[in-house]
Amino acid sequence: MNTLKAAILATGLASGLALTLVASAVQAQPGWGSRWGGGYGSGWGGGWNDPLMGGPASSPYRSSKDPREGRVEVSRFAAQGPEVAELGHGTVTVTSESGDGAWISGPERARYEAAIIDALVGAGYDTQSKPDNGGQDVELKISRQVLSPAEEKRSPVSGSAAMGVSNQGSAYGLAVNVDLTKPRSALVSTRLDTRIVDKASGKVLWEGYATIATREGDNDWPDDRIAGKLATALFDGFPKADPIGA
Image 1: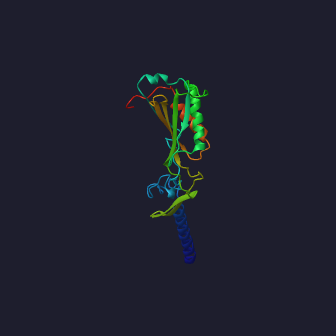
Image 2: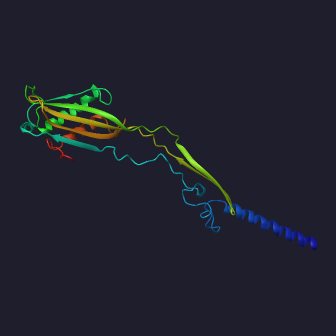
């Protein structure tokens, strides 16, 4: 009889120990805190972004669109004097300058010259007739500069891991982030400077510039579209000028 009691007691103790081990193992699993009284929410710092809670790793690469992209800025100035009344009338010739550094080369400048000619026609100028000693010259300068360099290539997979131990057990968490976005190309500012000069006197009657920021190689912003956007903005309401000090 004593032997039978000892066997029953041993069986009971073994069963109790097994249940205790199972409970401890289950408590050590993230996400079971509410079912097992407390869990890891308070013990590990908790939160969905914690790798121990199985939350996603934050990506350092994803960012919002640069607010400068596609935005056009314009400044215009008009001279004082009787010659200004001739703006928007008569014959006009268009030339563009070239130079070193940020200036755009000849083949590319042709697109901007064409866009300016269209804007001049809309403003009332005669661009078809052969110019004589009178009329006006329109001088262009187109330049570019890098506002933000291109992003470096990066690994598409990143993540973080954490391990912790408490009186409720141990836990190991791993959060993986997959970023399949391509690195952004350089953000480039294109600037179109325009000056209108009276041929007879050599006086500058009107001048202005327009700029736009676009991503280098962006299919949504070919040179033709950039040129048209800048020319249209520059000659909007021509020959108006911006207030001094604006």
